[in-house]
Image 1 (cartoon, rainbow, N blue to C red):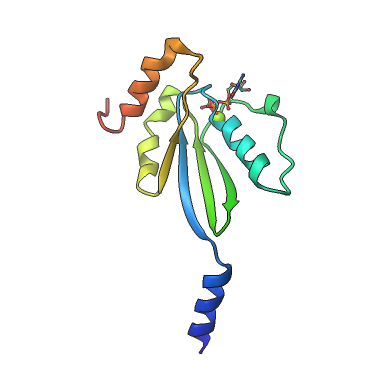
Image 2: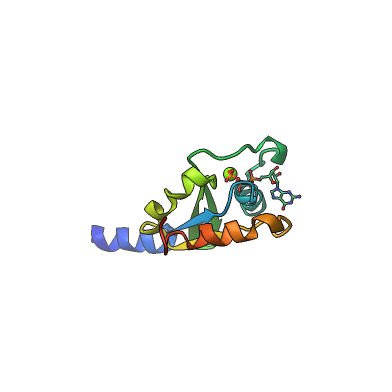
Amino acid sequence: MYTLLSGLYKYMFQKDEYCILILGLDNAGKTTFLEQSKTRFNKNYKGMSLSKITTTVGLNIGTVDFGKARLMFWDLGGQEELQSLWDKYYAECHGVIYVIDSTDEERLSESKRAFDLPLHPR
Ligand SMILES: Nc1nc2c(ncn2[C@@H]2O[C@H](COP(=O)(O)OP(=O)(O)OP(=O)(O)O)[C@@H](O)[C@H]2O)c(=O)[nH]1
Ligand SMILES: [Mg+2]
C-alpha cells in the first residue's frame, strides 16, 4: 500500500529533472542568458543586476520549472583553460545550449573550434 501511495504521490507532484549544459566562449552571454531565463520563468525570482555579472570561474547552477519538468542549468566558464572541463559534464546532461555572440565576428571561428573540441580534443 505504501509503495502504491508513494508512487501516486511521485506521479502527481514530483517533477522530472533534466540537466542542461550552457556552453560557449567566455563573454558569449551564457550567465546573462541563465539569469534572464530565471527572471522570466521563476515567478518569485527577483533577478540580479545584469551589470553585476562577472566572468564565471567554475560553474553556476540555476533551476527553472516548466510545467512538470524541472530544468537544471549548468552554466560553465568559457575561458580557454576551462573548456577542457566541458566534456566531463556531457555524460551527466540531457541537453546542451551553445551560446554564440553573433556580433563578435572575429571570434566565430574560435567558437566553432571550441564547439568541436569534445569531438576532436587538442
Ligand atoms: N548587448 C548585449 N550584451 C550582452 C548580451 N548578453 C551578454 N551581454 C554582455 O556580455 C558580457 C558577458 O556576458 P556573460 O553572461 O558574463 O558571458 P559568459 O558567456 O557567461 O562569460 P564567461 O562566464 O566568461 O564564460 C556582459 O558584459 C554582458 O552584459 C546581450 O544579449 N546583449
Ligand atoms: Mg559566465
